[in-house]
Every structure is written in C-alpha cells, then in structure tokens.
Image (tube, rainbow, N blue to C red; front, side):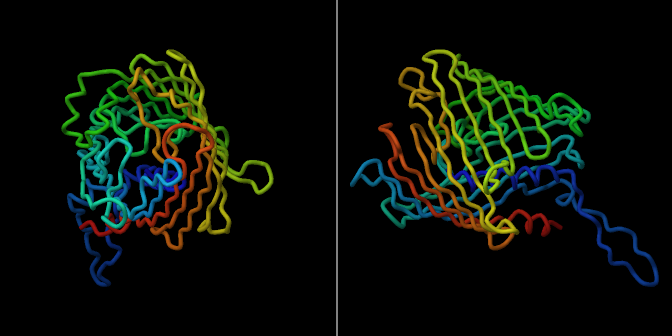
Length: 368
C-alpha cells in the first residue's frame, strides 16, 4: 500500500538485487607483504544468504470517503524484508521468502496508535517458494508466489502486498536473442485475502482458479512492453503495459501506460497511466502525475471481489501527483495524492507522506 513512485522504486531496487543474486563476495585484498596469504574461505551465510530488500517505513496517511467522513488520519509503520537462501551456492536452487507487516492482501502497514486508530503490531511470512534454474533459459517456481506484473503496476493488477499459491515456469532469453526477453506461465490459486500467513495458505497448492500467460520484450533501450492473458475464476482478462523512458515530448518524461480488458462475464475496460521525470541531474528529485480509470465491476464476480488492485488507486476514476526525494542512497521521502473524479464508492481524497530507509545493502555487507 504504497504510492506508485515508492512501489516502483521498491520493485526496481528488488529487481536490481535479484540480478546480483549470483554475486559472490570477494575475499579480502589484504595480504602479507612477505608471504602471500591464501584466500579466506567464505562463510555459509556469505555464500548462501542474500537480503534482497529490508525496508523500514513510516507514513502519515489521510483518507476520507466523503466530506466529514474521515476514514484514516494516522501515523503508520511498515517493516518488509525479502530474503533468498541459495540451497546450491550459485543460486541454481533457492528458497525465497517475504516477511512483512500488515494483515491483509492489500495492506502492509499497521497503526502506531498516533491518530484515529489504536496501535497494532503484526508480522507474517507472506510468500515462500522454491526456485530451480534449468539451464541458462528456464526457471521453475513453486509455493506461495509473488505476482508477475510484467511492465505494469498494481494500478490495474494485484496489490504489491498480495500473494498467491501455485506454480510458475519462466523462459528468459539471454542477450535479447529470442522474440521475447521473458515468457512465463503461472497456474495457481488467488484468494484468502485476509490470511497473511503463507503456511496457512499452502494447502491451496492443490487448488486452481488462476492462469496467467505473459510475454515481455524490450523495444530498444528506452521501451519495454508486456502482454498477458489471465483467467481468474473463469473470468478472462487481457492486460497490456508499456514503459517508455524519456518520451520524445516536452520535458522528456518517463511514461507508463497499462490497460486491462475483462473479456467475459460483463465485459469492461480499464486503464492507468503515469508520467514522471527526474528534476535534477542526480535523480534525487522525481515527480509526476497519474490517472487511473478502473470500473468498479472489473474484478467482481457476483458480490465478491476476485482480485484486489493497489489500494492507493483502488477502483473508479482517480488522479493525483507523486513526488520522491532521495537525499542519500538508501533513504527517500515520497508524497502521494489522489482525488476521486466520479461517484465510485470508496476513498474520495487520499494523501500520504512516507519516509523509507533500505537496510539490505549494509546487512549484506555485514554478513560474515
């Protein structure tokens, strides 16, 4: 439940660390001047354990549904960590887990007690899965998985804090040799939105109500495109997303536009876009604006929601600004605002200020 800029920053940071998952810490360069010393042997932790993300956040949030109907005016906190344990030293076989605060599919924050709500503490293992690389191109995953959003975001798809149980096969083409840079097929179960404990949901490994087929491709250096087909509780969806860095228009902003089509059972169409750009050479200041139009019936089956998209965007027509300031490498402050433009039930105004610190880099360096 973060702003788009914060979610994007988190996803980019996690992806960058994942790309370094095979990296082995170098041995010390210090040697004796008289007699060369043998390289020191790396410990089990240094060889096998990687902190992908370790984030601590605090957020002030205001939400109202209508005039004089304030839902949230509170200080919240979030603790989130993603860890990879390489069962084989080079990461050919691995376990990956996400432990996080928050008590539901669309929530990773808890109340501090400062504001309208009483304090609450929670921390759950929300995802846990086994991964196996097969040669240079394939990878299989099984367990409580993360969603694959392609080039898109939580605005039109599952909330960043969500989960699912199932199986995934990934094909990756090294060096952009194939038609697609990545293709994946996922089969599993989506639901149990109020059960954040992965162990309590693993019995769903034998159930199936969700299929995703996704393809992703970089179109030159500045553009990335993903196309996917989804079936969720027998409802068919098609989803497309495009990212374009430095769009060739005034100010040269970065564009992300995504669409989703419900192709069966009350067909409907939704979309979202955002424009962002760096406001200084070092990229410390980054700001933009988003627009989201997600019909209220997009994920509805009868009276039940079959999927929950990002809670910062929810459903309906919404628009708002985003801003991020990163004074240092691991510290950032972000602002997010949202204004409801139609009569869709739910939040009218939403505003949040978030302070986030990333601990993963120094924890990895501290491993013996």
